[in-house]
Image 1 (cartoon, rainbow, N blue to C red):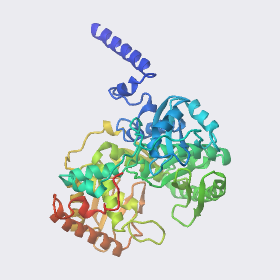
Image 2: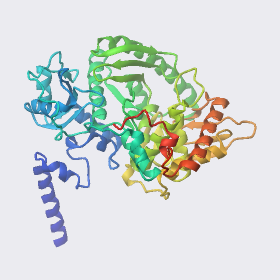
Image 3: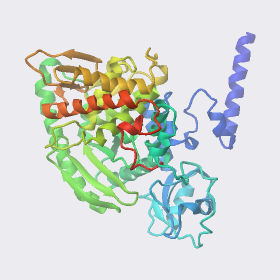
Image 4: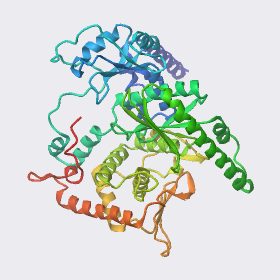
Amino acid sequence: MNVLHKTLVFYVKRSILISSCRNHKIWNKYSDTVETTSLFPHVRDARDVLMDPHLFHEKIQQYLMTQAKHSIVVEGDKNWSSENSDQMRNILESVGEIDFFSLLPGTTNRYVVQYRNVESANTILYQGKNGAIENQMVSIKTGTEPTSKKQASSSIIGSLPKSKTNTLHQLLDQQETMEDQMKIFTERNVMSSAEIRVRYIFLNVLKKFFAKHTGIVHVRPYGSSLSGAGRPGTDFDVVLLTKDFIKYISKPLPNSIQYMDTEGATRRELFKESVEVLEEIKHVLQHLPGAKNVKFISQARIPIVKFHFSLVNLSVDISANQLNSNSMLNVLNWYMRYDSRVLQVMIIIRKWAEDRNLLSHGMNFHGFTPFMLQMLILMYLMKIDIIPPMHKIGSVRRDEFKLFSTPAKFVQMNNSDSVEQIICGFFEHFARYGLMGYKMQPKYGLIRARPSSNKQLWITNPFDNSHNIVKNCNIESMNTFIEHMQKTCQIIEFRRHKLSDRDWGLNAILNTKDTTNS
């Protein structure tokens, strides 16, 4: 009885403490010590939320959208610079308490601002020049001249760029090991919290815009930019789901006799509907302030509308009635939250492939796409027991992938290799065994040799067992891919460790000389 009484007293005191802390500055510190991370998400860093292993993906999306609804993008006068950020923050704080403030990377006078109360954000929008509540983006006249540009910006919350003289190449050369280089390279090549927030602010803008002009209310993000591996300047991918598609994925699955007739006919109708929707979206986007160069690409396997949103310098791709891509976002994000090594491996190997012009898109391209490379990397990580196969972490119902648990609750795998060992092993494995003549199944984590009569590589789409995602990749492209892996292995053999007279480690296998340390 005494034990039960003490337990109840503990939880009552804990509840009172949490309740009293929510409106005080000590809450941010206290929330890091509480087991659950679901409390009061407003003050958390957006990237920390995106990579939180204790949350389901749906909850992550909910938290980031909550932050977006409290946020705006503010453009100052042209004569303002990043060195006047403290002064801009003081002006904006005059209307309400700020939870997040950061210069938008790549700009000198645009700021991402999150207010504690939505009313404060709306006050700024109403006062702004050419501002509108619908857009959550506003230009303001400060009415004051900026102070001396020598003023420091030390009090800013967020990832405000600092003055740096070393290039990334020089910074990597100063490290002691290749493993150290990989950590630095990853940190410098992931999307900042401010950029993540801007994408969700824009997603909220799109939701309101499409609901008003088309009646479509289901607007979801997908793609690498929100998986955790997004890099600065990455395109923003969005999928629209029509009412008919929502009904389709919600109804019971047909039995095997009905499947071919019912599912096939329904999917053809939904594809036709998605093309019609995108045709309409192309014309509707002409009325979205800031939307430039709107194009409808109808001949792709997955038709998309492309445009550039100039207000925050964001390239956007919109598709319709496609849940595979959204499900793949969930899977990638889960793996990167499950094991931090996955993020580093993805970032570095993709950079390696891009430096050699091995990746591209389009109907007339017959090489590797970024998605193919992602699947190849995941297959290798499954093979060496870094991550579990997909069927152990979730199940597919039609196109939608449902996760069984959060990454934190899933049992850890046995492989403790460093990122350096994993990446070197990746190149060595495929340089030795090649790609031709194998069938890979990411859903089950299986790699099998195909019959000698069929040497084409097959990587099964985890959401469609009948689809080979590399079917358009020809033998010449695969051989080129392997040749580059073999050359990379030779470089690694002689330049893996620190050298004083030549490039070594990542500087020897990646093009880092044209990338500043930002």
